[in-house]
Amino acid sequence: MQLLKTILRQHTLAFIAIILLNLLSAGLGIAIISWINHGLLAEQSLALGISKMLGLLLLLLATTLGAQWCLTTLGHQFIWRKRSAMVWQMMNTPIATLEAKGEGELLALLGPDIRNITLAFVRLPELIQGIVLALVAMGYLGYLSVPVLLITIGWLVVTFTLGYKMVSKVYQHIDKVRGYESDLQSSFQVVIQGRKELALNPARAKHFYDTHYQAAAMGYKQNIIKADSYHLSAINWSNIMMLGLIGVIFLLAESQGWISMAVATSFSLTILFMRTPLLQAIGAYPTLLSGELAYKKINELLPEKSLPKEGKTQKVKDTWQQLRWDNITWQYPDKGFEVGPLSMTVTRGETVFIIGTNGSGKSTLSLLLTGLYPMAQGHAYCDGQAINAKSLMSLFSVVFTKPYLFETVFLEPSEADHALAAEWLMRLQLNNKITVDNHQLSTLSLSAGQSKRVALLLAMAEKRDILFLDEWAAEQDPQFRRYFYRELLPWLKQLGKTLLIISHDDDYFDVADRVYEMQQGHLRLLSAEESRQAARAVISQS
Image (tube, rainbow, N blue to C red; front, top):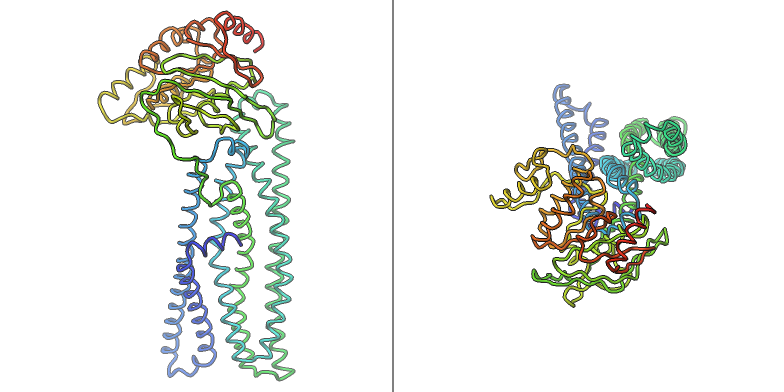
């Protein structure tokens, strides 16, 4: 199993120590059975015998718990490291890779998959204890009688061969359950994020419930029931066969005379001692299969190997003057829509507007220019020197069409920056709505327009040279929209910001130094007259 191999590779010494503790525990358990069968009645007094037995049992309890505690602690340490690595990898994995998987799959990785690996580690001590105990017990049974041991082994081979076939069915259905779990996560997202639309349209809600949710929920239910049924069948089959083995041993002792009744009793006590740990091991195995499947799913998207290096990040000079993108392209792997090849130049301190109809590729362009999408071909240059994606990202602060709002404002702990934050709040007309206390925003319960203003506040707090705003003014009221174009943008330009604005507001194109138009994934620079004509066309087609 890939999961166990990884644990062994990363924690070899700890795992060896845990196996030794389990061997000690198993050996101590078998020794107690032997002593109860042969030495307990030979003690001089009942009180002394009971005292010794209690002492041995407490020692067995401490050893067993110690072995299980060590393995459980190791497991949770492994989970903590794996989850932390996953979150870090997700934050450093290319946006396009994550988007291709879908949010439902990503939520399944961080939720059910990690939970299944955790449960696998919780049950792993039972599996190891059962296996180790069985091996030690077999050695003891061989000491008592080799012929009966061979019969016992044959019986157990038949028992666990059929049991394993049932467990393999468990794995098949757990694999299907994992797929339906991802679909359920996507359905839960729809219920949470689309709750208003679903409430307004009962027909849509019923169609979603019957078609999408129930398909995932029924698939999950049917396969989890089948998995549990095979699992329970394996446990009960093994339980009954272990009891049958005891009957066979006494039959051999009574009718065939292979062993004495005392030896038969020792055999039976040992088998009964093994029975519970072995049944627990069988019960734990499907959980380990779920953990193994989850671990494979995680490593498919987030391999354990280090993230690919993008080359050394060049330090962009604070005095840079020009950015240029030369024949860059991007293509969606599933949709076939391609942006580019396109070229664009931005001079420090200028204001550039980008217009285009819906679906023309404007938002994709924002991801491509800022380095969030990798260029399929072409290069970006800063003052004539080629730069990579990380260098591009270090220059930009972006407010996307649907921005995510963080509660923390990254400011220097100085009075000047706090005064600056107060000024930003005032200019964004948020000073009566929000305060910044100890780098935290007082509230995020805002309208759509106010949320965009907060997103701009957070972007300005990053103090990057370039602000890229994707249809930022779309949610603003007419008065604030005019204020944004006529006063706020000129103020930002006076501060030395380079501004890239995706906009449909043709009344304010005179604010821009240049206007580009996106059309079916291609970009071209417009003349002053063309920009006004194109803007009117955008409005009529949107």
